[in-house]
Image (cartoon, rainbow, N blue to C red; front, side, top):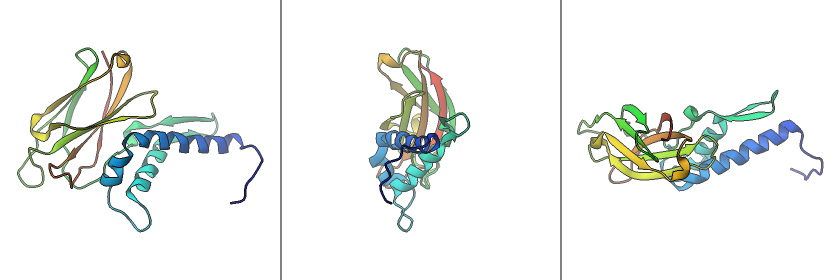
Length: 181
């Protein structure tokens, strides 16, 4: 495209801002999606497919000129490993949250030693943190300790599983949000 010296219209500025927000968001787990987001499709890399997912989760309201993130639409891994049935998300102790799930290991594809990975960020933060190997499928619970700056803030949490060999991953699931006590 040829260079244009005209200032961007408000709608163009929103589209550019959505791209910036999406790139910032995915930068928190870029290497993870490059390895664990589906399969390469033609010229589309795993990273590009993940970036498309994040961009689609940032909804633009062209009338109000605002952008909102739909956290439940974001997935950070995409694979065929069976996911765990999530049963809860709570913050009962100071500066932490706990995710619980049912152990659905059946000895075939879902193994007890599959590793839980957790992605989390606050409502106003656009760069999430990824924690790998927090617990196993058989554990049924994982507690994440946070810095004191998270107290009183709403934290959004996503969960996926990675097999012990690091070759297969489940599709990630949005666990919900919790206000950190």
